[in-house]
Image (cartoon, rainbow, N blue to C red; front, side):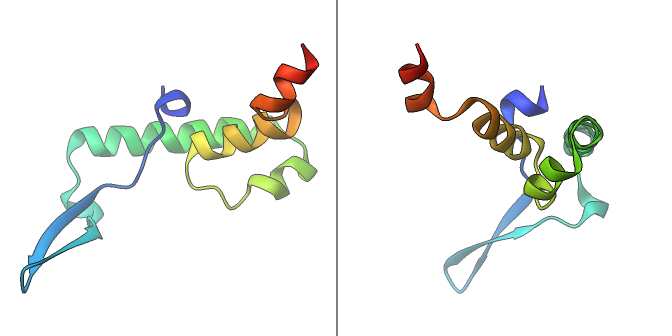
Length: 88
């Protein structure tokens, strides 16, 4: 359910001179769960990219997360919450 729950690249927080610093994890130290979630996100993005027109692809091609791409398409085709209420 990547599109429903979203996904973000795994990070790890370290403390440098008393300041917490968050950095992306190297892929070599990802857990199995993190690998699985990244794979599901990539499959979700691939499915979305293969089901849309070239014009739609241009508007979401920079999305790295399936949820973000899905939300952009949803707003483009259905409008935001205010537009949906007005349509009713």
